[in-house]
Length: 371
Figure 1 (cartoon, rainbow, N blue to C red):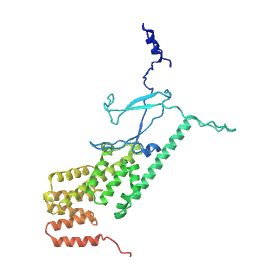
Figure 2: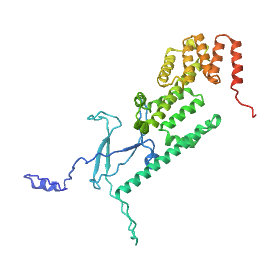
Figure 3: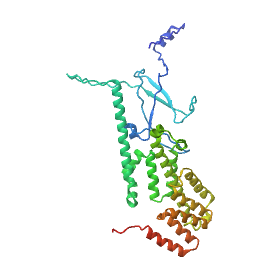
């Protein structure tokens, strides 16, 4: 493209100076460039899993890594690509006033080493075939990273007690967290880890993070009506997985808040003195869980949490009836048996508490005989 500038002036010296004047020409690209984002620099270098949608609360910081886009065909070396990048999802026609400015110089193409042409020329792949091959290779690489992530999480998930504590302090765990810490699967793992270590405040924190990473409205829309066969094929598996993750996070949060309250009151005997703010947090967590829980398949957890809600209100008789009904459906559940024993003791029925405790150890022993 040739650009000509016609300038007239009485001063010849000034016109001669304009000969060496640099000209800055701005023109829009034929097509906008997409800038891929990643949760770790390793994924950015290896073309791993891209950064997905995430809700970020005020004050929270999340690392984001960018990868340079492919150079457009109409640009030439030495030119400057100028644009902006926004992390917000805005309605059509609106612009982000806090968009991040991006400047990218167009680099020259790397020089190719001269190589002697082989006598028998290999058949070159057609452009469409080459693109299809590249796409398959990238998909294969993504699947490999998923398998590695799943294997790492599964290995950590099997650790308990002292072995788990030692693993959390190791450099290997730090490296795994650096690479996969942004994924929902890893945050779900941390919920289970902290629940195992009885660090309930961290359980609540991680459970909230899992919930923020799930599109609850999309799940509600899918299960709110009977999905079509096409929807079942394309969305069924992912929706079931998302709903299970949401349920798991919500029940983990509610149970953790229950344990925090019990620990602060040295058991369930002094629950009447629980601060309103704390009891409201538990009731809110229970209500959120009840919105998604199924009365049949989640009956055990619902019974445990609803009984504790009654205990918070100071109705020990109603709580005893509720826990007895729950034990009728799940007679070997250790958590329910433990809660029943605590209620007996809180009521002053020590003999009944010891009786229930003895039978609990017989019904669900810590270890079984070899034969």
